[in-house]
Every structure is written in structure tokens, then in C-alpha cells.
Image 1 (cartoon, rainbow, N blue to C red):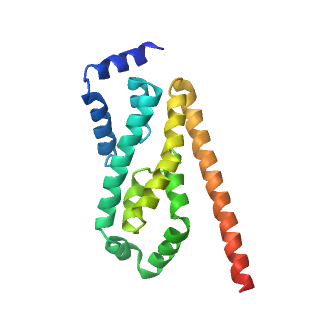
Image 2 (tube, helix red, strand yellow):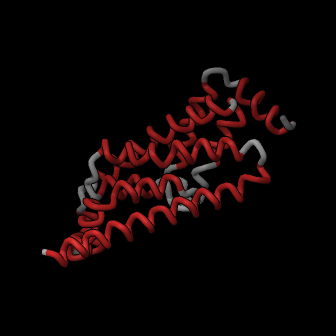
Image 3 (spheres, rainbow, N blue to C red):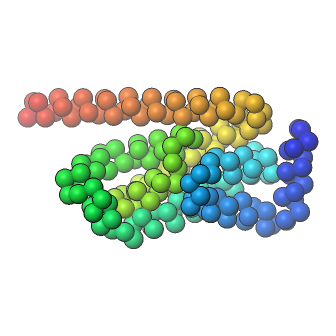
Length: 191
């Protein structure tokens, strides 16, 4: 354990029960601070409260922030996107949401370099079902949070770890879309 970790732990212990609440509030606030990396609060939580408690606190914050973002997006009811993109592109987006929304949300959640927060707003705007959205959010965020928790123990390994996580997630998603698209083409060709 290095001095910075001890300092972080002591700093948050001074907050008592409000320490985890402050981290969760920060995760929610971070949703609106696009320039601020979404994985940083996970590192802070893990360094302050240890691996398992830190990951749990971060996941609670992500679930709350994602829910807020989803319902803010849903309040636009697609009108905003239709005005920006037009009817034809919205039809393509509807196709994408019906067929690839789950995987898209997982990719955005597991990749530390894609906008974790924007996907909440977009999923809400495009009327993705909330349960499906939340399952996809957790499917991506649980492994990302665990990996960040592991890599944050040695900050020098964190950057490479984040690249590997994002790269593997992106490759898996591209393979998934390619296989699914190929199946759809074969099915349509036979019809």
C-alpha cells in the first residue's frame, strides 16, 4: 500500500457514512461533466474503500446516474433526435436499437474511452426498454469496474489495462455485429 492510497483512505474515512454518498453524488454529477473521465470515480472508490466496497459503491453510483440519464433522454421522446436526423435516419436508428441496442450499451459501458454517459441519454431517447438497458449497463460496468479496481492497485498498469479492456470489448462487438449481419443476409437471401 503506498502513501497516496493511505491518504485517500484516511481522507474518506473523515467523511464517515457520507464518504460513499459523496462518491455516488460525484458519479451522478460526472454524468454532466463530459470532459471528466467516467472511470476516475471508480478508482477513487476502490482506493478509498478497498476493492469490493469500492466496486460496489461505484456500481451503485453508475446505476443511479444511468437511470437519471435514461429518463432525461426518455423525456425527449425521440422528438429531439427526429428534428436533428430526420425520419429516414431515425428508421435506421430504430432498426439498430431493436437489433443491436444491448450490445451497443455493453460496448459503451465496458469501453473506458467511449462516452459512458451519452449512451444513457441516447438509450432513453430511442425508447430502449429500461430493464434491457440496465442489464446491458451492468453487463458492461461490472467487468469494467472489477478490471479498473484490479488495475488501480498499480496505477502504472492502469493505462494499458484500460486500452486492453476497451480494445477487447470493441473487437468482440464488431465480431458480434458481423456474425449477426451475416445471418440476417443469409436469411433474407433464402426468403
